[in-house]
Image (cartoon, rainbow, N blue to C red; front, side):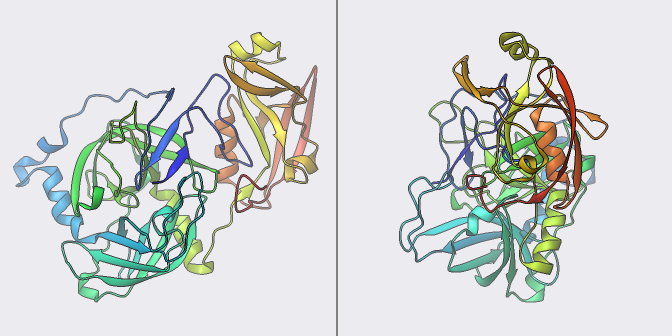
Length: 401
């Protein structure tokens, strides 16, 4: 079972470390395992009404879900990852993986060379990886080309006959709208080639990656996603992959689907795949702060000089923000049960862009490259200062910057 802290919004935002959310107030379940959510406070984007997915395109013979399944199902993979070593407990695997344990998940073929995309957490620590493609019972050995825990993506190379490789077409996640119909194909609870349908429920979400950093621009869907769907494709009405199913949020004591699933956008995956194929690893930019969102209510409660922006609570010693002179807080306070540090700088602009939340800072850092420079405008008490930060290389874990 894998566990991860949810990136739920609160009056004070989510904690950030170098463009990464590292703490929040509930639980999100990875689809290879699940836990209950407590105190969920995620902002919901209302989806416009749309025709049921199953009703669209019926005049063309078969409903939309059926046609997508027939077109794309053979390109979806069932993945089993064996590990002979005892895995240490972690936020994604609180009890550790038993010696000789097997994890299972989903994936999909992306080219005719045998590359399969899946989630990093599906194959984490694996000594041996096996893949079944489509409805075939044949199992093929797979090599791990590389993994990127910061986006929870991994690239495999499968030793399978050309005739069994049915690459799925990749779409453009920047063109996705709330309310768009979607289909998920995967292997929930080991039930291979399971198809579910729904809509895009929200966009621009952030979820926590296995190494504690934030994944930006995540797609939220109500298509049923359950343990075992990890790494499988989220597909649009044209049969193109727009996301990689990665996490679910559960409610109460239930461990099952409650209509809130999250998919890493395919546009993020494109760049990750390129770097994994070329170098076997992925570089990400690093800022090196922990902070939260300034709201009007917080500003009034603690007498802040502005009523919006990103409050810097901690600065990683020796990190890019520290080198640029950014200051963290020096006073602890508890507000509505939430511990925050006050007295730090408040980021109000990055370049010419006004900042109203820490999420915006996360997105900017995630979109940048190591070595890029950012001009930060900050409020420090009554003063306004401009600081130039040169972003560094993101460390392997948010817990050890």
